[in-house]
Image (cartoon, rainbow, N blue to C red; front, side):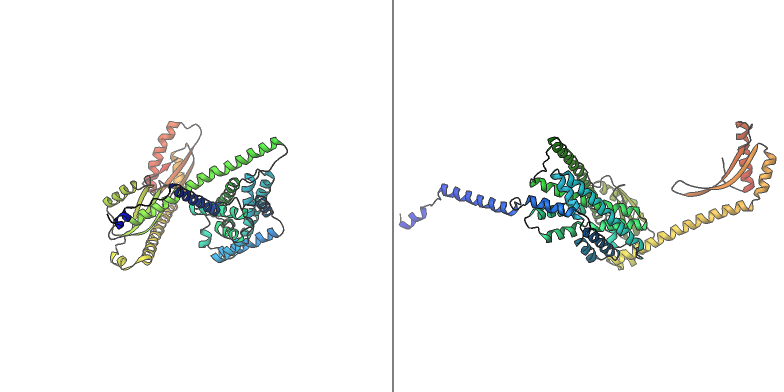
Length: 475
């Protein structure tokens, strides 16, 4: 065998001990890198953080005027739908201080700081709403803008922004040397000012739904910012406030724990509820977009109601047969998260398919929707006019009828009647509305029930003949 063949057969194996050493060193280096990358405890100044948070809670003098001016700026931005102006107002707003103070004080069992935070937050909210109310009450511009409408009800995205924004804020505050740019960014993202301005707007125009929805959005942001502060403070093991009296310390700890539970449980429930609503709305949009299709028919618009679980789809063009609608209903029942949803189809009578096909995109949908809404409005106007004319005809009938002569004749024929009244009653079964003539008879004392019933039937037949009525009700 040659020397070359011998060299090829030689296998060099690494030393097992050296390999294990290299592996352990690599793992140790990786752990050290990850710890330095994500660990925030080493660079956390707990005492300085508590002092900074307590300092930001105070609300008097300069802070009050800063809040008032920032509310005016935010209200103007919402009024003219300027995002840039609203962002500018959020940068100078001092609202974040008391909210962070609430979360931290609960985490460290500091009752005095908690009381101070709650009082200052309440004063801030009241002053903010009052300022916005006065602005919108005096402003000649009161139309609803997209910026205002966007702050009338919270979504799951608002909750997520509040959670991660609050986490980012408290982590920035715990770092030695506060990161101002992070605090400004959180102030913009969590958007505490615009909802309070919208509360004032809703009160100024008398729209309670807007005011409550905006207050709800502010409450969501405030709760989750405070909750994020509480969680980070606990994870970083901020020192608890010590009391000389051990009983008071335990009682304070119990109160703080109850407050934390009272905030966390509804918050989790609210998060799940909003998430479910967001999923429902997203699934609904996908279903209408991908399933509600029929050649020659066009979806003008659709609405969804999470509470009633109803989806209303408005179609125009070629009428969709019931068999196709049944297919849509069957598929809806098999769609995840939409199993218990009701689908209601409304079809217009417009057959202008050739014209609809020449239109495209949003222009086509906009024109078709406009036509549909105008037709619906015209039908409603005609229905109202018909009802009005029916009422007028009934009134004319009564006016043409000599009520005095009729009552005298009734008195001569039925001496037991003490008073006689006539009126028209408008009634509905929520499908159709009708006007019913009503006669009220009051009998004298001493007239028996049997005599009343017999005479009432006779009077009813007589009045229907005299007044030429198809229906008549006697009370």
